[in-house]
Image (cartoon, rainbow, N blue to C red; front, top):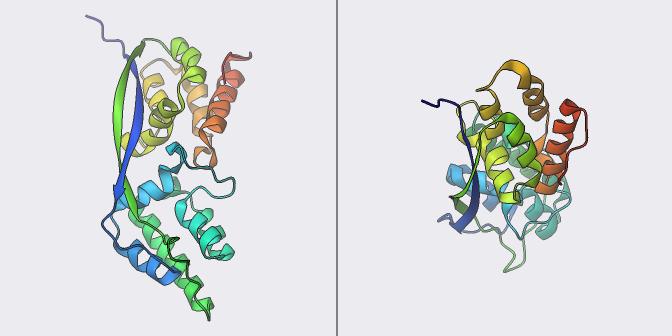
Length: 224
């Protein structure tokens, strides 16, 4: 009987839909919606932006910051929300509470509350992650190391980013797989844990993973 772990490479796609809330035209309305929106809505606007094909903002990683900056001209609030890393919180309810604290403080400073133009309101969305089995399986850590730089963007997202919400230990799938082997791979696990992935796009994440692998194997690896 073969009890060795097998790593099945997955791919994924997002199916987005409206969250069932009215859109927001200003900061106060955004605050009201944030207070009651589904957790999946916060997750989408903070964590799933990186996998959306249309997302390309060099300054901010979450949709709230982008909207405040671009559509309201509210740079201060955009920057305050922009430094929030959802993975620094124990759960998304804590993130919600911090968001509301920041928004309330900013509202108390404003004499005039800017509004977005008609058609530029903030639409609250949520998404479902559809997972596909690529049919590719990995049977050893060395094989995993060779495959990581060549995985698709959506596979990297699923196994490294989305996994932090899905796995019991709030870590990536690569680490879960490597822990089933001996301590030889502990240095690589530690290198993966040092990657501040939230503020990276998927190309940057691929490079960071490749760099982590190279720092352990002591040689350049193909890919990326």
